[in-house]
Amino acid sequence: MEFDPAFVNIMISTILISLIAFIGVFALSLNENLLKKILLALVSLSAGALMGGAFIHLLPESVESSGPESVMFVLVGFVIFFVVEKVLFWRHCHDGKCDVHTFRYMNLIGDAIHNFIDGLILAVSFVVSVTLGISATIAIAFHEIPQEIGDFGVLVYGGYTRKKALMLNFIIALTAVLGGVVGYLVSSQVEEVVGFLLPLAAGGFIYIAATDLVPEIKKVVDVKKSIITLLVFVGGIALMWLTKLLFGG
Image (cartoon, rainbow, N blue to C red; front, top):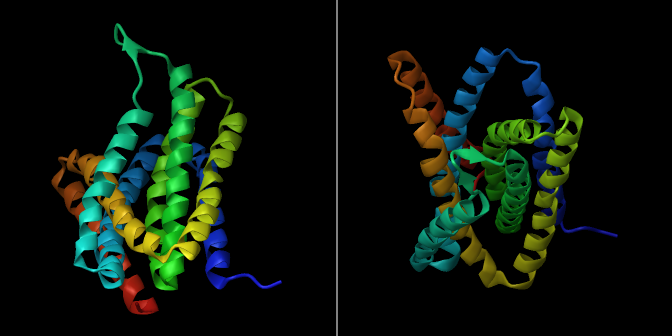
């Protein structure tokens, strides 16, 4: 029985992305100050990689496959990610106190949908080309590392033991694999879907980078640290450009 190479690549990439959930174990072993420095660097690198992935890979491929009008769907993707984030992470607080036990469930649900969407993006990217798939995998991976550390912390703070939090985080991360399968089935059946999902994914990448990550970088006031974060941010963009040069397409 032979499998489509694109499907194999999708499975490998989504499983690798899911395994990032175990990064929480590594984070626990680090000194708190060192962890903060690493997270800041990862956030900067992630922001650059997502921006680079959107403008260097996803958007050009979208225009090439579906024409200039497809760029309009970038705005649609941006708005969709905004609405999803607002709805999924909305929680009611009374008198300044929030129910962390309720929030941990909201966090799991939100993370599951987020990972599912990541799987869709990876599937569509690999169906178009290996180069696009690799660049999307790198961009998502750099974003997932700091996010998974944060998610793990939320679950522990919400009352789960570290072992249970780790396993739940991994199980939820596996929804990326499900998203990959669904994305492959849809994109292989309806070619027009690819041209629609690529700019949507680009809009999502831009939204995450511009609203979640860049604001964190802007909080740095120290001149030396600001220069370093800027260089790392540009390095993330350069990494996406290098991926295009190395793998073509």
